[in-house]
Image (tube, rainbow over the protein chains, first blue to last red):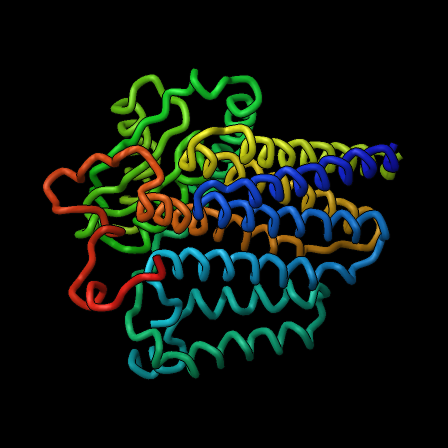
Length: 89
Length: 166
Length: 126
């Protein structure tokens, strides 16, 4: 039962990652591309947690935490660059 | 006495938060980690006090906890609603609207929490604040009546936040 | 017996997390205007990761003697998701990719369009 749940989860999250990448390539607006990148960062956290659960280890936790922080900061930096033409004023 | 207390403990809630976050990062509880967490929680606010000159008013914590429980329940409901709309409604059938919500709240913390709540709850995303901070621009995914939506948000969240912060 | 209950709870949390993550990305691809697209990933994607973290916490309490540090990621995601959504909406408004917005009653304009003299001096990246 657990194996089946893991297989289904890995499949769904990977598919979600591919769908977000399609939106990243298709665009058409800058806002969509930023949103797709943000979604991909969140899905990457989900994949890391799944890997840690399936492997029974804790070593992916720090990576997931750093992905959460860097994903947020890069989204804000990108949006701010489009809004103001500058990141640090 | 009071000024000494203020100098040593400029942000009590920040100190508490730092202690809890350090304990969670270490992820195992012993007396040693607790002592180190309390030291960090006391020293970091004092060292960085120069960058946080304003002291925000301490909100009513009990009511804030009730508010958080309500918001968590609404997030669960919101996600089921949004999943249903995304999967089973065609794009043309969705009735999207811009809704302008006039704000009664004055404190920046309360407005920030209200905007965050609106984004995480059913079918609404807060998009922008007006230049003088008196209205909030909200985008709704699928509503029949925008005025009803605005009234609902004011009644359910803004009234409670006003009690907590003002 | 308790192990079986824990396993069932973990499997349920995993499946609901997978469902919500997938719905978020399907919404990102299916919806047709930029502002509609902001709705799906900010809500569904965040709750999806929240479910995975819940599964990880149940696993920790059932097999490893307790772990709460998943709460850190969960709290961080739930605090930052609205801020990202807000910034992306501002980008959409700023670039004019969406329906015209109604004016705020009793005020000049929205904060995104409120440019001071310092902003007008330099040119943006566009």
